[in-house]
Image (cartoon, rainbow, N blue to C red; front, side):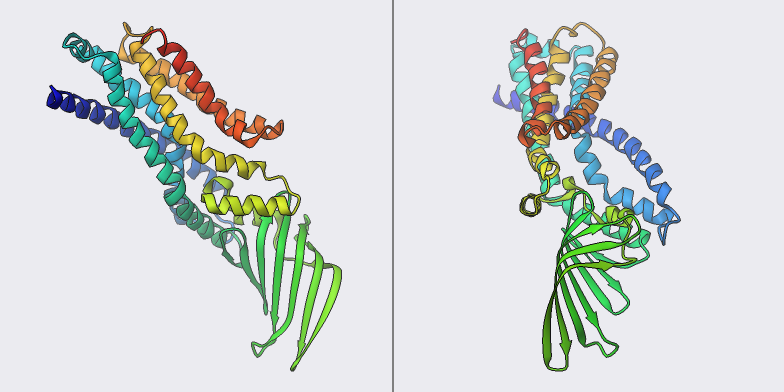
Length: 359
């Protein structure tokens, strides 16, 4: 009996994973096409060509996979179990004494594997791939000589090297270092600014200036309230350089949140990204629970096609509801934890209320 149950567990898990990958492949192709069309708007800017756009789409595939995992688990579960129901396999299992709870546990065990996989994607694979994608795109779009770091970037202008330590919200940069060299390669002037405000005309207004002027073996220190950096980078070029919150690892997010709060900036967007690293795997699990309610719930006597159509409709609604809830959370200044967990609570509530009538 134990070996029979193991065979059934493997069969259910294999069917679930098979249709999960089938659904996620279709959705990834579709959403990748949308991303490519978006990237085509930048083709021709600087050195950004079609090959660069294709490379960007390829490098951002892991992030797209993570975004689509919840809806793919919902549809994969509905398709796999729905076809089993249509073919009479679920009825045969129940007739042989296997309970609905036991069948569901096999599906949930497989879902646990997907939840762990989504956590690994978010923490270990996506940050590096997204950083590489953004670096390649920024260097191609921008005409400046730029190297992106996790939280800022280096730029070269004539004989000066400019390091922006952190990009904050609303066109504000923090900790700007400027190293100016003479024609012989000797350091001539060092400038540090506590922060900078970006203007629309590619002008940067530096604040809290400390300068060290090097003349021979002497170093003179000078303090300035403000300093203007002309014709540096526009707001659009800076937006290209910024790594989005979801692309950062947990340690980087924590450091970035601390830096924003230290400079009196709103860190809610990054705090939400931090909590969503936990909520996305949980949402994936909640979607599996919801898929069970479609197969064993009130739609049990209907065809797999009807379940798939209904599940797709509800999945799309929940996907956009997730995006809307996040934006509303930012707009209403809700606690980031609440904003990130609202989709999990919503989906789990719907799933459990439907499953209560079954078990």
